[in-house]
Image 1 (spheres, one colour):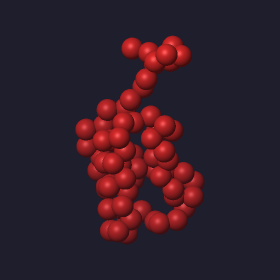
Image 2 (cartoon, rainbow, N blue to C red):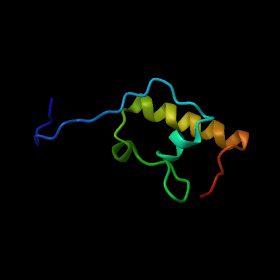
Image 3 (cartoon, rainbow, N blue to C red):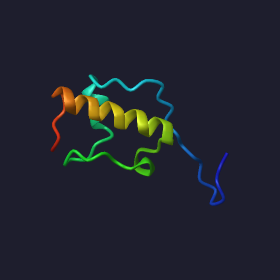
Image 4 (spheres, rainbow, N blue to C red):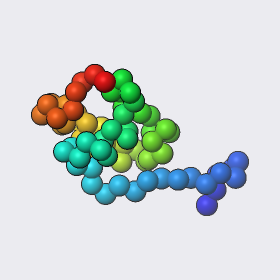
Length: 68
C-alpha cells in the first residue's frame, strides 16, 4: 500500500536487535555516534525503541563508544 503521495511505506521488520552485533547497530548511527531518526532508519516505533535500547546497552557495556 502507498500513502497519499503514492510512495510505498518501507518498514524494516527487525524481530531482535542484538547489542553485541556492532555491524547492525552502526547502520543506525551517524558518524558522530548519534542515533538516526525513525524516518531516516525507516522503521516503526517499536523497532526504533529496540534499536535505542540495544545501543544504550552496548555503550554501557563498553562495546560501542559514546562518541564517534
